[in-house]
Every structure is written in structure tokens, then in C-alpha cells.
Image (cartoon, rainbow, N blue to C red; front, side, top):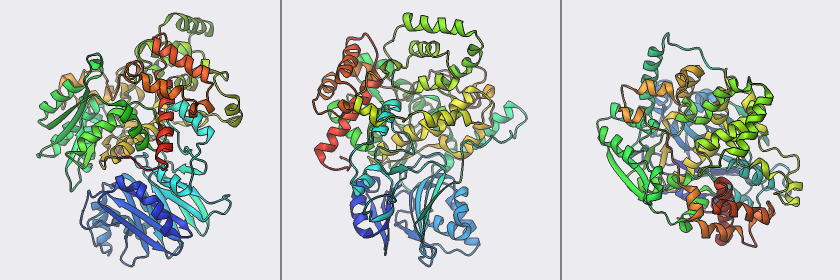
Length: 640
């Protein structure tokens, strides 16, 4: 695992001097540079495979191809053997070197053969061509900017693994208003847009090619390709094929020359990975779980179930009880993400990564299982929406009115009552609007009155959900639930979960691997019908049935938990003072966006318990914490 950066432009050494220090946490073990007139590529390396021979950037035999890789290529050994049979000579046992020779042999087409998580930069000096590539699922990040249209620009193309590294080199500091609206809508800034003007996030499955001043972006793999035909004749055979594929996938993710472990929640996904790890290795398996100390937070605790799973599979288990110092933790989160980010799962992700790094350099996670196999209640909501839309519109309108007036807000904005209320309230519109009502976070009652007039003028014409509407409608699935999962695979998974996993593990110099995000598992999941995936009306119904011989009953029958935190209570108690300090500050960034009186109303309603504005207030708080931390430190680097 590494951090990579580079530039096509004048004074490339100076560019690397500015970008590489901001990536040190991604690769504390080694730094490497390739420099030639007008070209610079830099890499910070975390030694995982071939520690002695993997110095980056690496090259082919003649030095005409240079490569820097962030990530892991899980099938590199097979590719290396094949290339050696064709006459290629290797100087290491590192996956990065394989990329140089694969490019020599197959050109850009070779990227389609890669199985792994990766973002890489490749410079072909003979063709004067730079290639940037990102894996199909968006596990590893890659940001870029072009000098086109920039007055006095000293570069044609610059890139980096992290947004702060590139923003620092480009001296970008002012957030774009459209990005701020996107952030408040989704709790993150969706790709390809970023927080800063002129910097974009290369989309998953894409290849950027620069040659002689011309930039072209090619899509080498598309998640929305139609599903292949099933290769089984019965569901029993399908379950057998899945287990064989899943076992092989987990085994591939265990390639490492350094200690490796697993984030274990005790839920279905992480327990399934542990079961397969136990199948393919006889050595010690290290697992890590976290829980909460406060008695009022015990409903969010997953320690007991995780401990039981660890005992069942005889793992070397580590538990951490959290009593976080929020005033210290939230600025660390903001610095680690490098941008405003308000998924509260970042809190346990950051802390469990910190705990795991004390024992291992690589960890596995169950991220992706929900999106592939149907793990969110909202997917069942979309299954129910089809029949519900068959009711006469006046009936649905009446139910919407009743839900608005009679159903309480609940204590958690994502509890069953809240879900039912949103289902009935928005059940009169188009299916995509219903789904967006469950996955976006600007309440309809905000309207335009909540926003500052100047901000409204600056975002005129911008529609934060426009791309999501297109992705939902264009997904080739047979049902509304399929389209919902397809949308999440292309937005929520890469831009929220995987971005968070990458940044919050790498800030601790920990490599995080996600077996469920293997593209072959995705192809298998897409070949299942909606009815098969849910086995009727059960979340992850197929997955539970397939894993029944491998997991104890208390896991198969247990409720979904996930990395939830008691955020509503924290905002009313532990974080109350911090919240009020930031959201009443005269210099707050939020004042450029929302009317201060409206923000005060949000706080009053939430803190009194009359309404639940957890997500909205946390988004505003993290925006202010991010801004305050950046101003205080006068830079973009990660605090350690």
C-alpha cells in the first residue's frame, strides 16, 4: 500500500516536494521518485509484499516504463508467471513491477486483467504517455487536476492519492459552493466532483491517458454492464458455487509478507470472512472489535456477539472499549479525511484502525456485502414500493398525510419508525425520488428559506441528485431493489464507505482490504435475481442460506448492526458544548450557507428532544471542525 503523486509540467521536483510530505502516513517505510524533464512521479510506500525489493516507482528492464502503485494486485503471481514464460525478466517479487511488464505486453488492455484494489500511474517515456488507472469498484482513490484554462499554469496534469496533497500543491483552499451543497445533501462530496474547483476524482473503472497535451478518459470496466447468465441449474448449486468463489476470494486477499487481521463486528459479513479465513489457513488469525462504555449506549454494542464469533473460530481476539474524547477525536477525523465528511461510522472506523495497527499492518473488512447481497432495509422498502405504487394515488396521499402528522420522529433518524414515515410520506412520487428521500439528508422543509440568498445565487441551477437519478434509471436490473443496489454500488459504496475505509485506515498506516468488493463476486451477485438475493423478503437471504453450513446460528439469525454510534445522544450530551460553540460562532463557514436563525432552530429542536436532526447537525459540525482545523494549522497535512 502506498501514496502516489505526480505531475506533467515544469519543475516537477518542486511539485513532488510539496505533495509527498502530505502522503507520508500512507507509506512511512520508504519514499521514491522518478524525475525527467517535465515529468515527476512520487511514491510513499507501506511495505506489505516483498519489503526489500519493492522500492517505487518501479520499471521494466530498459527503464522506458515507470510505475507507481497504490494498492494490491491479487493475481500478480499468475500474471508474473505468464509474463516470464513470454520472456520478461523481473528483478523483484512485487506486484508493481508486474504492471510495467503487463503494459509492455498488452498496452492499456492489460488493466482489464487485474484483480485487486489499485490506483496506479504509469509513464511510457518512448510514447511520452502518462496513464492513470483506478480499480473497478473504487477501493483506492486517485485525484487529478489539469492546467487547461488556468492562467499562468505551470502544469498540464497533476495527480495524487489524497485530495489535501493535491490541493496543497495547487494552492486551492476555498470550497466550491456546489460541493458544499452536495456535502449537505449526501454527507460526503460525490465523485467526480471534489471540494475544490478544478480537482476531480477519477471514477472507478476508468483510465486517464495523457499524451502530447491531450487528455482522454476511457472506461475500461462498467459496473452497469448487464449481468451474465447463471452457470447453475438450482439454488443449491448456486450456493455451492458462491462458497467456492468466496473462499478463493478471501484466500487471494490474504497474500502478505506482514502480519494480517480482520475487523470483526460479529455480523454476517465479517463473520463470513473469518469462516473462510479459517478454511484456508491454519495459522493464528487476529481479530479486532470495539464497543462503548456508557450504559446508555449498550444497544449499539457489538462486543458480545463478536467475542462469541471469535471464540467459535478460535481467533486471537482484541477488544477495545470506547470512551472517546470527542473534542480531540473530531478534529483528528476531519484531518484524516481531508475534507468535510459526516458519516458517523467514521468514528468507530478510525478507532478500530488505531487499535488494529498496534498488532498488524493489514486488515480485512466486510465492507461491500450489503451492496452486493442486499443488506439494507431500504432495499426491502424498494421491493415493497412496487405493489404500494399500485394503490390509487388518493389513498397514498392520505397515508402520506397521516404519516406526517401521526408518526413520531423517533430517537434515531434511521430507526424503523423513521423509515416507515419516509416510505409513506414520499410514496406519492417516482421510485427514484422515494429512494433519494431515504438516502439524502436535506429535509424537504428546508426549502429555500433556510439558505442564505447569496449562497442560493451561487448554486443556481445545480442539482446534487442529478447524476444519481440517471444512474438509478439506467441500471439494467429487473426490479426497483436492483436499481437501488446498483445506485449504491456506484455512489455510496465508493464515495462514502470505501473512501472512509481508505483514509481512516491509511492515516494509521494500516492497509485495509475488502474481499466483498472483488469484481468476480459482484458478477456473481448480479447474476442472482432479486427474489433469489433476498430469498423472499429476508435481508441477504441468499448469503445467509449459502453460509448456513459455515456459521453458527446466532450469527445467521442475528439482526443487522453495522458500525453504528449513539450520535443522537452524543449531540445532546457529550458533544453538546462543542456543537453549540461551533454553530454559534460568528466566523462559522455555515453562515455562508444557512441562515443562522435556522441553524439555531435545528439545534433547539434536536437538543430539546422534540425533533431528530442528528445527521444535519453532525454534517454542519464536521464542516466547522474541518474548517477550524485547517485554519489553525495553515496547511493540508494529516495530524498524527
